[in-house]
Length: 294
Image (cartoon, rainbow, N blue to C red):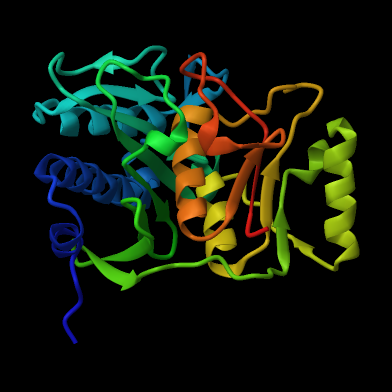
């Protein structure tokens, strides 16, 4: 049976050729990143640099390489206005007249690279021109690519969630209309930080344990969310004493994931507010977050 390719899927789900071009360009880069992750130990491109990004994270060599590749892939697309990335201090304006802004964490979970564990790329696309600080509900497209035993793309264009597996150089459609299961056996949180959790987060943690849920935490947002998407459960990163406003970045990590979670019938909340309604005040703003079905 012939599988639907990503390009065929996009042709039937959007008439916006510029949007299609941007999505295809981003996913082509993700194919390159997948190959580089596979051969990183052989090519000596794994390990940390001496640099720290704006969010205070030590940059891995592949963080920088992935960011540069994404930027390069967008340079020739005149409709792209700017790139907002975890690895860049400011919005990188590519074309003054462009209307689309790209939000990305080029390589989520990059601390997992050296142990050959799961990583991912997160992206969001919005037709917002010179407005960068937008609420997540204005994203036209949200997606992530999970680099694991299979390379999998999860994508929403605002009308449901679909997934694609990379096979012989093509992303092939494998699931449509993905919905988060009503119940799940797992919860995902960095429980080693629980001594710093606020009372509400501690109460949630106690409730999940009382319900017999099992802990699964990978250190890569893409991986943990992928489990929630397919198996149900909850993933949360609350306030802590060391990160009173949360640790995950709103614009390019949380918002694209929140868009996917809501399109899959789930909920994304930050400090009691629907996450997609929050208007950020700075590019690298962080918020506490909870993703779940209920």
